[in-house]
Length: 336
Image (cartoon, one colour):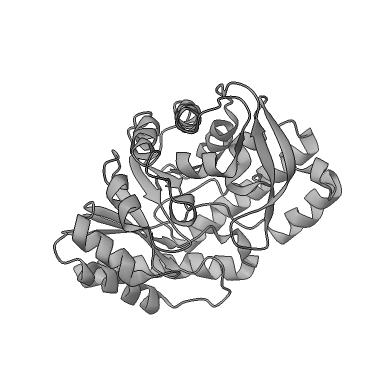
């Protein structure tokens, strides 16, 4: 029997009150962005906002709880942007949208930092003890693609160092059921022939640091055929597909031609569009995909937004959480 799990890739929009309060506390210039050494007042505001978004996930009925990554001013580049051996350079466009992040220029060894682990430990203390915790990190390829290497001097060595750094973070995580590695650069900037075989090894390095189910979630379109084939060599439990953006036929072709893990994450709700899909629409999209790949007997299907939802107004974001939860309930009813 297929298990349907409602969840998100994290990186939530800040609650409106927190956006206003933190704007006053932090300022609005590049130098005011989070650097890992924020004041007690700023930390307190983020802590209150974290508690609020955990409550929202409980209220929506999601099957996995995430921290929300509200501090991540630099989006997926955050774990590097707050590292002691990383200098933040100029402002760079975040993928193909109107958001920007500080270029993380790695100038020294990527030693363990504990920043993300501290966030997740704080989250574990706020959960109900019944709904499983889901950890979120950038995938190693995306984090290396978003950064500038001024220390390692070799593309493959840099990717390996990024993977070791992420694994060291995971080793300090509290108990978690699932680990989502967000790797949109596999779609937008696929690795070249020389680097492509190194990507599954990098994922394996991170995955080996946890006993949780590991999901490599890709979005902003469909994976190239060769990239997908290499990705399947990784020790992962599920691949995440963007069912909203890009060429869905290519996604289905990849899954049918090269196979698909028995677990899959489906980006069903548009994380960048304010139109709130109904639970029935999300259910139909999930069914469409699973019916297109009849050779795979799916054990777990994660229902999620395709991208990070921080682009959305808070009210729309909350509605999409509820729709994802309701869609999972519909699937459970159909399965029963």
